[in-house]
Image 1 (tube, rainbow, N blue to C red):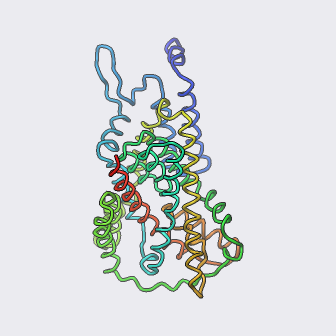
Image 2: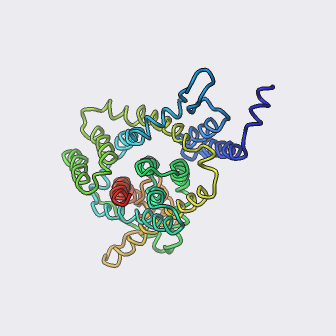
Image 3: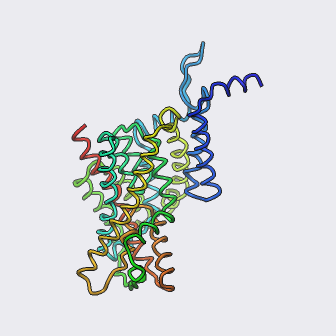
Length: 378
């Protein structure tokens, strides 16, 4: 009891706030099932790293010297020194993705690009609010709707807000079913949301499916070299899926590898959620800017679809533009649900899925472009 009282006396109010945030993240994961594979380990990790003299972070022990904490070690090795964890996760993500709907409708590449508008809007907003260029760029990448990309970019640019950015990115990914319908309805009419689209996919040969990840990696390597790690591992995972001779490895990448890295990434990133670095007004500002990035990603994709409709006789349902963000497959499902709500029996899921997988590629390319541009001024 004496040690318990002594420990409680060392707890600061900021650490108490982090305990509350940790419990909130666990509640969202368990009760609401919002990205539980990430929010639960992040929430529990936030509690671990904020315990007084916590053994999960490095510390000096009298008569012993420095003792290595496991979470700090994982962070230094897996994220800070090599960015290995977020990059390795992309092998699993790539193995899960079917690029068929995109390859059969190449126009969907444009919607993936248009839906990255929120990234650059958020970078400008963060800069105007007083954040440094490297921090503003890192905050803007929350709009990529891709947690690993957000972590990688903020780490490469040495942002001091890695923890807040990671929490914002994964929280808003989980809230896509709430955020996107609101943003879509702001800029569309009921008539537009009820537009029917026929799905007449062209044939996609096995050779094309195998060539796509290889060619994409080469092209991206020349356009945005800084994104090669992300795009390359994403495409490598997809090549495992499509080659047809490594089914066991493809299955392992989709399940064992993805699950293990997701678990470790979630609890490791909590090292950036120590109270002294997390509990301040900047964190609230980052959450607000991140929300704006998601909203303007959605609006950018929808408005681009409406622009394309000016030149088409057969109109596109503009909601497919909203599916161009990276939150796959959640965003395409949200768009389909809205379409069916406005017009029962209206099926636009495959069109939305094509835009959605395009957004997965576009978001990591955008991350590489941001790193390239910002690195020139650092």
